[in-house]
Image 1 (cartoon, rainbow, N blue to C red):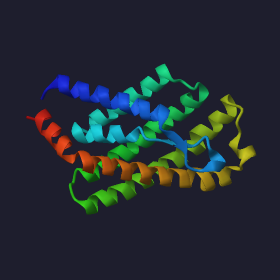
Image 2 (image 1 turned 135 degrees about the vertical axis):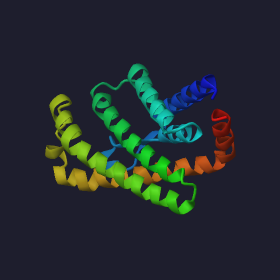
Image 3 (image 1 turned 90 degrees about the vertical axis):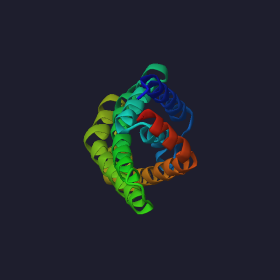
Length: 191
């Protein structure tokens, strides 16, 4: 296993993920434009498939550190980034396990289960972590503004369902386009 090649792939994928996180983020639901999907999951997912799941986590963490160091949005990042890491980590884990099984039925199941796991984790984290912290540190009380139930059911739930599906499908499209390269790289890394 060529350690230099592994580290190079991790660094390149983390840099691409950081660029996508900063420059390719957009809202899915206009009413809650602060909930933005970013496409950084795609190079994280591809990097995991090229190397292994642990490397995918490393790419995710490096991308996050780059965001904190080079493009920090203060309180929003201090609250949002840990949630993003957990959500992307959950989606990555489930999707990786099912895609590695190698058939489309398992992959489809992985997309569905990964999306549900992402959504459930974000509902829990929003309720117990984000909503209270934004109210305390950013003077943004979502309960008073939109109503807790309206926000959770009308924004967090559909946003994360859409995010999980979009990121999974885009990741799989890129994977299918790069499959030969990924397989060759994976074989070279493990020979």
